[in-house]
Image: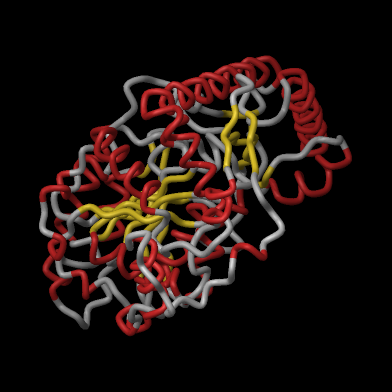
Length: 430
């Protein structure tokens, strides 16, 4: 892989911060090391002496005086070393990336901790996008990604999806205006980046089939695309075993995988992690050095204590419990949809994630219907146009989340929607 091809001028110009490098060196040094280089504040002046977090089984994670001082101090930009290593071991166990066998400069698997996967996504687009570039992505897609990439001045090329995720035939159709050999021409505007949410897609709930993943990876190889695998719902797949990731089939070092603890441990802790080829991860770390410096050391330390206590098996058991919880919520949502929306809407039962994607029959654009009339009925959904890659595009869809509402609230909410849709039909017929 020629990684220089994917980096824009800003990213190529980034260099390591000497201070940040010294921070990592100091923390790896022996206790006898005397450092007069550090500009770190003196932790004796911090007004905290210890902390503890109580878990559901009443056991505790304790940060004693020594740990709390470290947890409240600056830390290396890639993440605290013990958490980074734990997560690397997890990725190897879950995905066994072929890139583990590559040399560092050839794309060996590396990993860094980020302040949620949103930071990683934002910094990645800022690393690879030059104004005028063409970027491929799911249609519809996550609005947070659209918010990150639209201001960068690129052209977003929507690739149609269905209940099985991105369609390989639609991807080929979009790419048909270029030839595979165009990727070797620096002057060509052939796309370099493909963004997709393969599991429990937001908003559609779609999960990409294994056949499609394999086919899309081969298309990416053919056109030398970098795949941005946004996977916050990986652990919320409702079937076991979980489907193989793009990372697990990445023989070239062309996949960047974005994972998050937000859906399974805590959204407020703001901890995610990004896995991919070392030459690319190192550029993300340089961007972190010049912006956030690092993800909160305190939240990283609490997270590591929890993961160390559980071990990988305990962590995966917890993920299964979370997934089972959302599967049960999904089942309640589908039951209520069957009860109230049959003949008024169409949908597919999601096999992962938190969302049901409803197509409202006879409705051209749901925006006004939801933002005005649904509010009058005291029920709220997200109109489908919020997820469109094409700004201003009308959409007959709405997104319904089953993550927080109780079964009773889901049932009442869909009943109110059904009442509204019947009223709209009567108005249209009158």
